[in-house]
Length: 217
Length: 217
Image 1 (tube, rainbow over the protein chains, first blue to last red):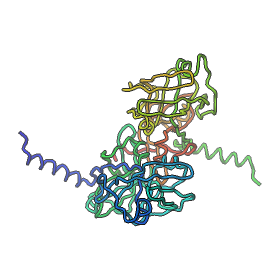
Image 2: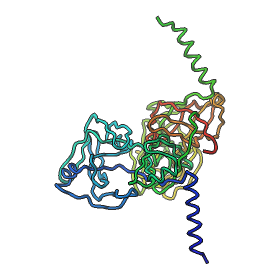
Image 3: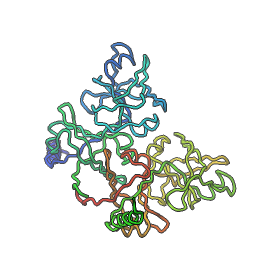
Image 4: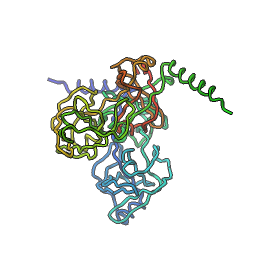
């Protein structure tokens, strides 16, 4: 018979050892194209005072995938059923992959969340009640790791730092310049987009580790 | 006034130095989904004795993109206008990206060219004169470097070896397990698929370098 107490103790020790080693594995979250909406744009797209409906919780506390979607359109192409992620934010953001950008025939930079970039031609968000024309807040997400302050401490990394992350397997890669974001609102998660996940066979729920690459190779 | 002779001499020296350094840059070729056809399958799809029409030469000597395309279909999805690459080969091969595989709703492995894998459900190639049902020869290409024997010697690598390749930039990555293929029919070229290129912002004509990563990170 299994002694539950002993088992729990063994698992706790295992986890503590991993944490103490300063390099515990980080769970992967693959981000498909999505939109974060401001209050003003939610009103325009879905109606005055509209509240987003939660479909499922995301790993980051308080964040959720909403039932609501929008159509994204440019002069060059269309993406249908683009998921809204809640809750409401200060600024509207549309995060897409390089292959999405190709479908829309727009040229977008890799951006760190919060940074701004002026688009040459507008991107339209189309909802059931109205549409919004975006000329900023559109970009490929700079791949990043969310960490709580405790996790950052254990890993020996700081908010804003860039680190290297290794993915094992036949399509093994080391992602360089992975942006570290530390907040007491975060829990550990490595965010990549669909192109990045496809390139190395990563799936949501997989685990990766930070590695230290010598400065000169 | 520029002295052409001196200029040529300076450039030659520069190139020689790079080659001698054992680590010259390798040009990138991004492969979109494509089909290589056997004689038998060309006959079925395009008619008895049909000869492929060259649209443009590829970097590898003798290889070309043909004007001809096929439709690729499964029970789960369709890809139209899939380019044929010539010349005719011994076996038919369909090389696609992970995002293509998702569109076709098939599960395909990462394969080294020439290796075989049995599919669970068939993939149809549809041409103007007939169709072919494939149950093997379908896969994601294992990323690889083509090299001439002289280039392999300069780089200190051997046919069949796996090396690490670094891509610089905001989306910098190190691709691990890059397969080295050496033949006197090849010239240096680093082949990745569209997903891999999108993941790190690579384009055909860019340059990358082999790097040496310590065994334990």
